[in-house]
Length: 579
Image (cartoon, rainbow, N blue to C red; front, side, top):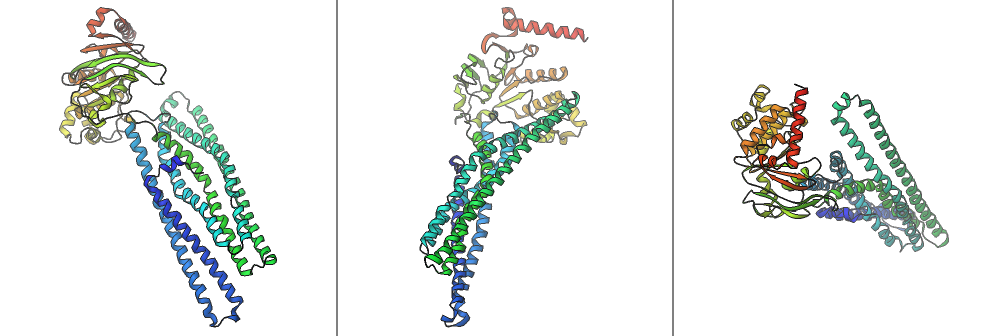
């Protein structure tokens, strides 16, 4: 009933569970003390004539009851506060761990987890685990301890009654175990449907423009309704399961208490137990079952929390990219005889060797689906090769500290993210000390300075996904932000994809100018952009086939020359048709 892997997530917060359970036990003894005081007072009332002192004989039972009530009240308050502290610390710690894990994974995305799923797990999932840790686990340990403590108290009064009560208690865990097999399947589906609904909603919102253009919004609406209905059905199954389990546990708990009461009455009539002692046993009988009954009520919370916890664990248990402690001393990059595979079976890259000097423009031309993204991920440190090595200044990439390497590296891609902040704030993320003059200087280079001045200046706020500027402006702004960061290595991954010709020309002019002082690596499917490169690597089927300047490769008449000629003829034909 307790998942050890989830329990390990608590770390140092386990102490709060110990404190909580200890206080709950103290509260149990206080409750028994109150019950005993009431029975003592009843005993004194029955035998009032036998005692001297009048009403003062009730003083000690009253004092004991008052102390018990005070202790019970104090422990209840403290238990509530400790659970609150535990819940807050667990949420804070788990969210920090999830965030730090995502940061450590860096540019590598979380396997099999969408953006919506990641958000739901880090928000709603952590909330569910909060209840699992603060309510379920303390109640579990208390429910295991309480019946044995009560048995130890009652066995000296009437062992038959105490034994019957103790033997009935395990019926509740048995019913919980029976229900848990059903519940685990339901909650696993519940979280799957929940994240699926979130994915569908996010996908529909992000693609709303396309849905309207294609007049497919009605079909998507129907699809979302279907997803929502699936989630409603699984939610109803969860509620049915909870109601069924609560009913079963009530029958067991109150049936066991009723049996204890019947045994107490039988003990009075058959075994000579005093009525006051029987009353004490009757009042305590319910306490045998209430802890486990409360535990059972928290069971559905636990199952929901455990399902969320498994998703959090799957994220936290992903292996971190391997990094070392050394510093970057030379920025010459080299891919040395590298082989890479995603699944361990099919090699995406095969014995590839490429050198990227610390000055100059080096381009990698790769046919679509033949390892372009893999090369970028290897150079940026997101992936590690199956064999061979990626080196930076003759040092293996994994031996460097990530902070040191990323201090020298910038990546500009076709989907480089621009934050929903002001223009100035975006630049300050790259360089906290950048001045307004420096920002405008670099904006001049990418032909954006006038546009920014006329549209709110550096305080202009970029909308989410840069929706209030054009695609070309977004790419040029992304380039400008990277330029102000003043890195030593720049990787341009399809940086001119899907933008206008004017923006493309501006970006490529800046890339060429940058290559005079920096290491510039260009990965592009459009060969017109790599013509001015100092060195070009041409790859086919994951292998490096050719290398040289554009002129040298054209003279060879190989794969690069054929691809360039074909692409050029297509572009010229398109220009004539649209001329």
